[in-house]
Length: 284
Length: 280
Image 1 (cartoon, rainbow over the protein chains, first blue to last red):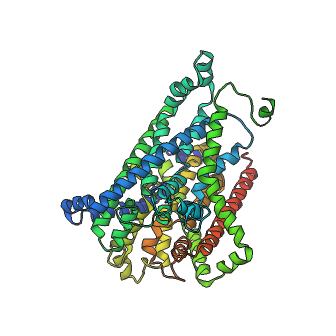
Image 2 (image 1 turned 90 degrees about the vertical axis):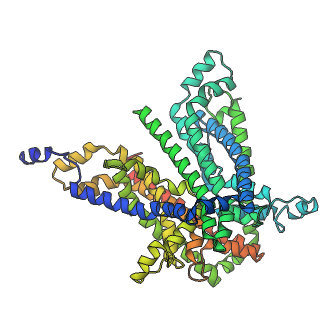
Image 3 (image 1 turned 30 degrees about the vertical axis):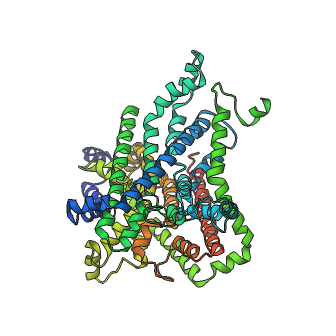
């Protein structure tokens, strides 16, 4: 190694790209993100307001649109608390204890992420549809699951199943069990330990998980599309209503409804990013 | 108690039984029993019937488009995802935080919203579609449209898998490589890339698996022309609408089997690559 090489390079970092390479890499990245990510977002807002603010408000207040909004909120209100409770239970078992088969259990919890949304909907048709396993029994008892609200809730439950558990498990694993053990030693009950020690430690991750779960629950399309039956004003969620409007060439109305979900996505991402930045700052 | 200890290490914390019971019961009810309905129904059809359905020209074309385009999109996501992850982690520039947050957009934006938005952009009278039409390229209502949609949904899987690895790369190794006379490109290729490669493969597998199953963001831009731009998930819905439950079940079973097999293969390559580098 020649000694002359060192002082010449020591001006910048020894191991770094040239300024030109950096600028090029940044430019290519931003153009790519601009074309694939920013442009679709801008289009949603621009098309939603294509007929002015009044057109936007009219599209939202249209009766079928309002029914779709109400159904979407109902589904989310059923699905999110159930999956949040499950996520807490699963994270407590997996993160705080050592047992055989833990990797298998974690893989099974992630399973719905590897299944196509359409297949996720199909399995419930195979179970509860007219030709399904329980089809005859349900028909005899006049219970409607598929092409009705319960089917939509079940399919959404399946699709959003891993979100909360996934946010909680790595965090609770990294936090260990020392604080809980201290609380128990000091005489707190198991529930009190969970509520006053564990829960406050994971509240931000829980919030992120709940928001991601909620965004997916409100926005799920493929699975819900299979089990919904597409009855206007009855079994159409917001995404399904968006599809119908778009296919009818009511483009501005479709984008007006879609912009509600886009707004929800932006708020979700904003909170997620703030929570992560906060966690990063605390970790140093 | 002693039997329990065989599969669980003793712990002073309470609530294992309750938490585990809730987890297993809920997992079985919501995920495992419904999925087993598909598996049992598919095995009831038998391999010969499934093969016959899969070899039907329209089904075969749909499977080919679905897996082929998902693979191409995952490969493109690997290239740009690596670059974007590197830029977001290593460089400082105005707007970096905004673009970093933007990468997660496909995780939060409903697929139907992305679908109509991409379709509007790339339609012949759309902003990108009109510009591309002038140079004779048609994206909307062709397999290229499927590619665009799948690049969109897959990118965050690559970026978010690779980013933490880049953050933890030891700069000292790169500096050592540079002082030993390697050019920057050599250092990146022979010191940095081998450490990132396993994560890159994982990201690609995740993007691929997601792309294979994707429905909402694809169907608006794809045009859904049978034999040309019809994806397998859409064909499942077409079969269901024709009350052809067997056909729908067979296609679903094939998709499930192939994506699990792919994930398994790539997971195996990944652990092999980790062993090779002595990271385990």
